[in-house]
Length: 333
Image (cartoon, rainbow, N blue to C red; front, side, top):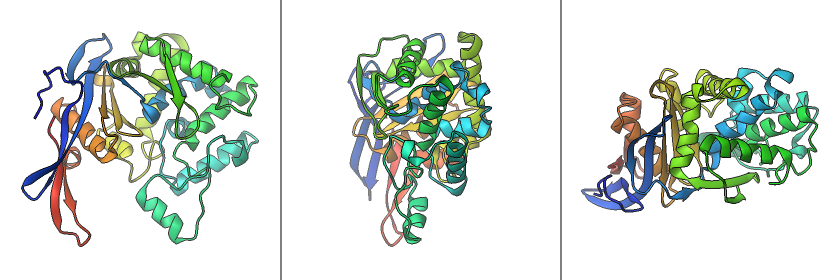
């Protein structure tokens, strides 16, 4: 097993056993950093550039406040949590999305994302079993897109092609990200939902999230934005993900002390206001189960969260098709 102190770019974080043998190793990089830019602990080369993907959603929600959209449209705290979510398209999510579109005098055709099945396995099976079809509202990023559309409506931005990197709402997002991370963004790709997907060093992304853990680093509307986003998400964890979402499960289990957010292809982040700290992990091969294990393991390792739920997530049994235990997937970082 690779030690965190070693200089390898990626280090062993999660292992999978079958029987008594190690079958797979998932490598990655991770960091715990505070709002004073002090690295508490790191695993691997945290200057490595990553795509945070949906872990960026708190920063995308940030613009809802800095533009005055939150107050002008009188958005509820539940809607802020939903805008920051990677949701599972449970009934409460669908109802919220439909009503929010109606309030904006828009419909699904205004989304620039494509139709999708729900993110969570259980919810997806329910929809398929009941002869459902893919819809744009089911997409786990529809809440984020509603937040973007809300800014457009309030600021009278052109709604068509709001996903374009040159659109004012996306330029706003990139400016906010650069300000919070204190780095110039050089690489911008396309995310799974069609919005811009900026890349930046893992440790700079983690530092950006420390502003949400310690809003006193900001002022005015920005301070209120950082504080309010965390508050809304920890107060309404099911809107922030879903009943089966690891984001919601870990956030809820922390008694409002930690906000946990995933990003596609092996990213997880945690915002910890009590410690003025953020934790971010990226699994090299993009395996989301390994990332789920890793964020639980990191919370345990850093003594931020220690109870039965997080312990079970950090060391999970693997069962075969007849329910017999065949191995484990565990944090080893």
